[in-house]
Length: 176
Image 1 (cartoon, rainbow, N blue to C red):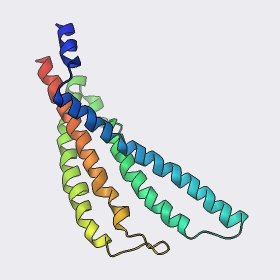
Image 2 (tube, one colour; image 1 turned 180 degrees about the horizontal axis):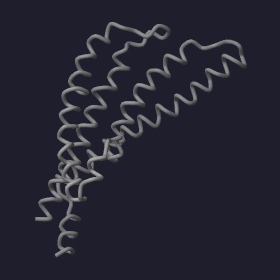
Image 3 (tube, rainbow, N blue to C red; image 1 turned 60 degrees about the horizontal axis):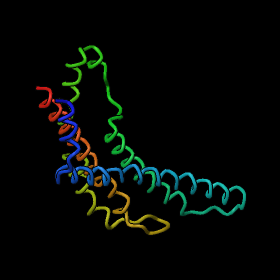
């Protein structure tokens, strides 16, 4: 029976292909967070050298680093949701039997989905029109490019949480 299940899961279906494509796209959050963090380190090093060695500080470095930090924070949070390494208070789940703790964890996931939809995506989207008319002081970059990280990462978070829920319910169905 187990070999039959393995053979059935190896058969490529359009649903499996779609999930595989979405999984590849969903790894974009890690790429963006890693690239942003790397650029922050490089730019801050450049800023230190120009300020203290060349005695000619660059005013734009801090601006760009703050924008990159926003993207690093939100996309990093999304990447942590994908790998299920989000910070959580697990006092109650450690007191419960493993099966009950597993169910509690997946009871909380819909709440995270609601949070991602209601606050991060919805309110982040509502913030964007206000940020179109504001610009960074030195480079005059519209804040919309900085604040777009909020709803963008929220969509990734929503996908990751829905995928975790899907996996939970399909594994429960196979157990029954």
